[in-house]
Image (cartoon, rainbow, N blue to C red):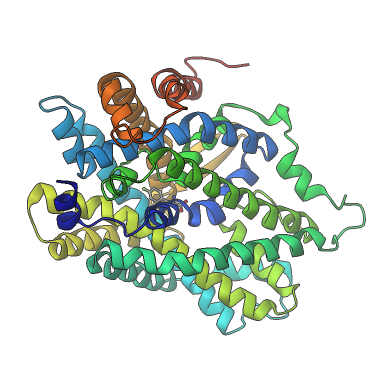
Length: 471
Ligand code: PFF
């Protein structure tokens, strides 16, 4: 039976296959682009602390729950819930997941496009001899260009489409196996350089960046920091929308789900923290503002490369690896939509990929041009902390809705389902591979999915909406 399913739907060729593929989904722009800029805007070390707590108490349990649901049903998220709980509204989780994938991939494709542009800029050595200020201007100039962000977004989406059409095995494993380790080594090299950069100002403490990252300033801890950390942890781990239900359906019956979820979550978190170590010392040493928003890493990294031996080559290699890391994540997003379309509408993979990729690319075009053509398209709100009006463009709105609402709410339902409705025996069967493996962490896991994770997510929401006031 297992064999048949594997033969029809395909499964990963080895344990390393699923870990590499799911880690490929998790590790991407979320770690290297989004984590540093959100941390910079939202509390520094205090954010990091809350983030780590969320990964351990909510992230890992949600990831493991998705693997269990995916492998036991062998279906897309929507179909999985239809199969597990027929005539009950759980399938809405699957629908929310597809909507989240649409939204996330729309803006993710735009940032993937920025990465490609930066690969190109590295090749033509555009940053050579430029000051920090000029490097920042280059980013702003590019982002508000009339066509370049769109051009690269389309290229990025085209690549995502081609890999997904080619099929899951061939598409994913090949790339992540070689390039992820290189990305890791490059990040370590960049971190070492960042930490050792001489400070632009005599007055500045040399450890300012590391202190900002690792020393929590609890006076900065507020509802926004906690809400940001929750959304970021879900986004970075690729959880809450069924991407890992889809990947879970490709995991072989004798792979260990618990250790896989642990390895993937911890490596994802390690890479994010490493990106922080690569970015923040340089932010302070080179006189950048940690609150530079979405442009933060695209401004800092070229500045660091300018201060490095072999920076020209390292920069090229880095942006190639980052593009591939972004692709291994974007394909998992597209995969959610495509697998659902194929299985639910009974259309071919090719057709499903064309429809999904085209629609998302159109939505993404608005994101890519959110600093030019669609600049005024958005919402103006009052930032309570500064008392100033801020403009949320389309890109930011999609990011906000998906990360702050769809993913955590999806995750909430996933753990509630698993903890309270899936049945303890079924959970145990899946975790132990039908009784083969010992599951020493079973009680801890059940406690986390039944109580800790749902309550924590609910508290964060109540706190954010002001219904509950923490501290
Ligand atoms: N986790 C990816 C990243 O950190 O870049 C982004 C992502 C992929 C989010 C897949 C959600 C998802 F389903």
